[in-house]
Length: 234
Image (tube, rainbow, N blue to C red; front, side):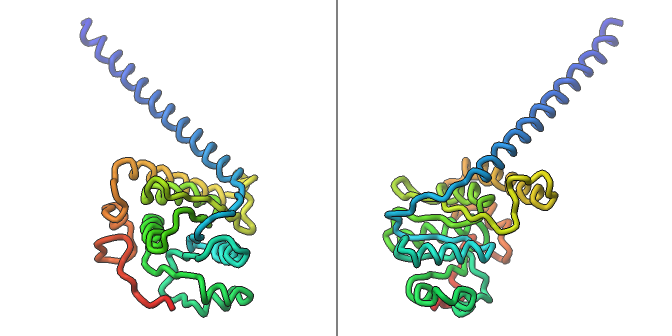
């Protein structure tokens, strides 16, 4: 009789522990999300004096436009636009930024190889070392910046410095994100991607050998996330 009564009690206790851990996990996840949003909201644009170059991640025309403006203002010697669509030409970028044609022609490098943020990090590393750059400004959307920095810092070595330059997209009200379901979904998805990137980089030694990067790449078959150059960039 004693054993038959004890079993249900043990089962109840086990259920209570599982539910407690689940609630704790959800609260931790929610707290982390709020901290993530706070970091994104409070992102500030730093002083870029002394940077060697600028790297802009594709995904929004405002990122590229702001990066070209920084180059024209004398910040950095060259600009890398990473993750350019194969159908986007240099002439198209000039058409969208006609006042900056001379800078786009002389000092902008187009990366057609990167397929995702991991690829952006690989191509940034290659570009920095090819030009001997130690300090670069990173231009991307404010909500994308935390994950971008995780990937870039994982790819780079000590002494190679990143200065984040966040871009706040027009029409994106991060200060009242909870009132807009689209913005809430955007931030939630980016937070989960950030967590995955952070966890993955704890175990991977080199992004160029990332199996995860191969799995999420858009092209098959893919041996590395940053493929061979598909076209000339000039």
